[in-house]
Length: 340
Image (cartoon, rainbow, N blue to C red; front, side):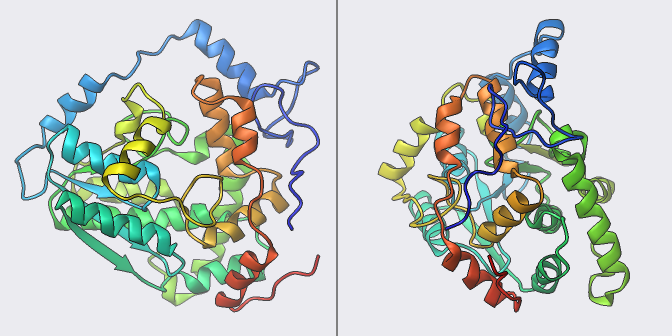
């Protein structure tokens, strides 16, 4: 079993470990991210996003094209519930888009199949092994690049290409408030202190790898590049209904279980999620190189927002997969499972 003690020194308010120079703890055991959040909360009160804001935005796109929006759907509770709300709560006609890089969780795909059939919506399924060599290279070179971040760049490019093809400038995601800090755009991980080192390593790996591999010569160097190029072709907006809704995931999880036959994956990380199998390796690599993952960042945000307790986050972040789950992915990537 993997070592679950990703850091002995953790912030007493969130779940981030001390990882200098990006994250450090003061003499009271509070991380710089939480300190800055507290200061900004007092001096800069942000307007709370309301559901009426979301409705007002989606109404601008309603009925303009065959599909009112494009929904990125992974099969997890957040994206499936987003689909449910688009259809049932807001009466929109979404096109569901599912992306499979060759490591998708079959439980997640079953959830999507059930949801689109019950709700009667159109869907597209995209599967490709295009990224397999790049994923393998991250492992073989012991790069500190974050596999999930590399994948997200590709995923977003494909998504926005599909949005352009179907003339759907409104793109809907199932992102939680912990996954993005604002509406109308994708979350630039490079601008968050928690991601500085991760983003730098990921960018360096991509620049180096695409330079010497003709297969990836057109691969975007960053998320900013993806978004900037897409905006030149179509003025899009990316939103998640979860940014605007006043209730927690517990509410909609019960709903989709009952109405859409949604089921938890038999094995996924974090606890009670439905992420892809490649995620196991990405998590292992991130813990090895940084001592935390993007899930720790997400849940720390939710803790600061009062939407999750520190105890709940720590429970969700416990490693619930073993070496065999990781070894299976290494084999599929044609890489050697590292000795421990």
